Length: 369
Image (cartoon, rainbow, N blue to C red; front, side, top):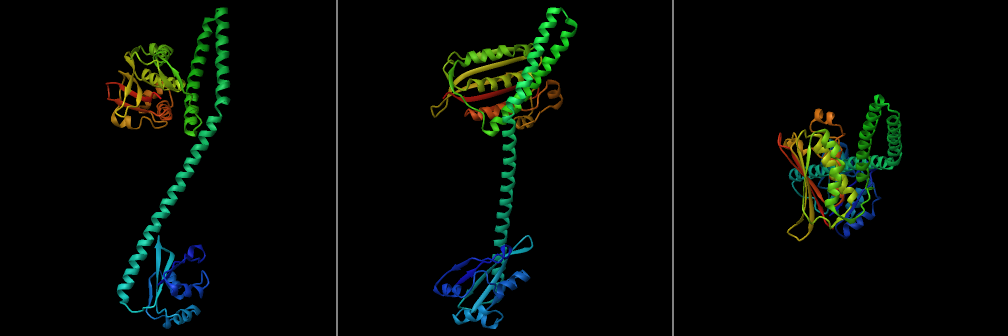
């Protein structure tokens, strides 16, 4: 048996599949890509072609050569994808007998199955190309934003610095009536700097350009310092911070800057959506069944809470579960996305439990190294 599968979509090139010595001799008589009458018929009409005796089809030079070798029967079946014939599979053999109806039905079934497989492969390839293009665009965006860190942060920090300087001068001159405007300028600048920091840091994580610098530090001290830093924010919302820290947190080895950033975002987020409530920050060591050591951080609030549907989309970029509350509180919906990215970068996880009217609890697990 000798079979050939030419693809008319790529200029008639073909692949020959050799089954025995006779096939080798037959292939030697043909030029690669040379059309056969059977293949051309299947290509033109989109239907299987069956010839029990090749000598009855003397409309191409190769038929006489095939008959001289003892090849008697021939068949060609089209492969159809999307209503178009994209390939023709040809078979030749020394036996020409058989039931034409049964053979034609079998060939049609085989051609249809091949077509379905090729269509699926083409669809998968198109999806893969689209995914690669989207990932490439995302990486290019992330790389660009990550490289803009200095250019965006430096002038904004200069603005904040000059605002402080002007505030000091006005305080010395006793111009309290205009100092309020300078305070508002600084508050707006700090808010904008926070948004820029989240956008740029998330882009660094996505682009794989966020450095991780492991060092040994006192986790309890880091948590207390971060809570003190955010006390003015909690005071503005009449919230109270409650610390629940285990006594063995001093010997922790990971990146303290990234841990502080995770904690800062979680406490800030809890403060924004809690009014006259309690924000509990807890930390403890853990050992899993495999013997690996972890430390767990949790930030729980008594705020508005969320539904299961809201929790499911909470860590997606630019998603804000309550647009009206988020607009009053400020933010871009990137803080929790950044937290998840940083946790992954440090080899850990973040999870949330919440219920409407009962507050929320975010739990971070990170390896102790």
